[in-house]
Length: 138
Image 1 (spheres, rainbow, N blue to C red):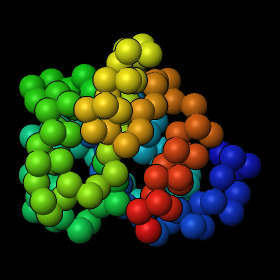
Image 2 (tube, helix red, strand yellow):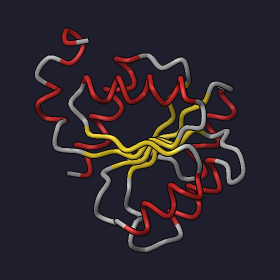
Image 3 (cartoon, one colour):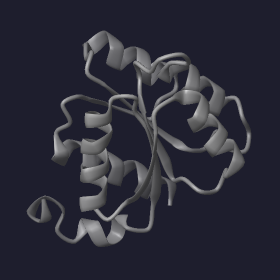
């Protein structure tokens, strides 16, 4: 992974991201990629807990990576709740899903996600997307 990130990792180490993913293996992969890029992470398995964390600490995260197919409150509902809350609506929101279609990508972006990345994650695309988004908000 070091070859993928190079000097990017040093720049990206300033951010903390929240990962909202109910599948343990998928959460581990995302966390491994982010840790290799020297990005600090917190991981939660459901939208309700994620919303509590974000609202309790509105300045803690630079972005939130949200699986669209969460049990209970899904990723779209979480995104809408975040976008409707003044103290956190500025956060960068990245949709991830294993159920990728061009229509779902379009729907996610139109609904308010800043980016969409299909699973399985392409490490270079994923990290490049994060770097672009996070540098825009810095």
